[in-house]
Length: 265
Image (cartoon, rainbow, N blue to C red):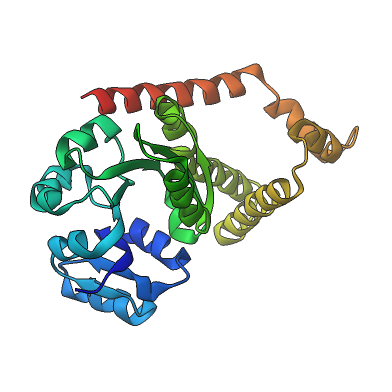
């Protein structure tokens, strides 16, 4: 049986985001039971797909667990007897702690937990990476490099994951909500909705890209845009309200609490 460097249990959009960033697609094998989806991936990426999870478990050195949380136990029951100590299981499943994954998949396989976000599907993801006790830094950093090719990655402690979930995991919804609010405000000012959406979205994208690439200090950037007596300063006079940052803090705190509840449930 041929050996593969990377395998996938599951071939959904998040898995595809990771796959798209792997330079050597010939080294990848994916388990996907739906024939149409398998054919789509084979045509688009020239990657090998199989319907059987066991085949991936037998021949891949590093396997990404990319299934729904409710499907984890069923997957584990099927592949657990086949996993070896030489393999690494990388979970991108939300709410599944390393302890839960260890109970499900056994003591042999090395386990690395990842908290990604939906931007992974656009090769602009943010992934937090944490290895189980005994997993070498070399292995953890290897996972981080693979995921970093689909955006950015950072190695953290697992106890930081509730905060990560609240900030970057749930964050795309908050940004979309802000874009929606700006779009609706633009419509009220007389713009057509599609124009307001374009202006809001491109402004958010361009600003984020500039700040990321330049490393500019956020406070200095804001001050630089706010010319005294100008339009931005007039707008910031409304936005610079302690209630705004308090709402943001409360939003993240609520998400972090729920993340902790789900992890302990």
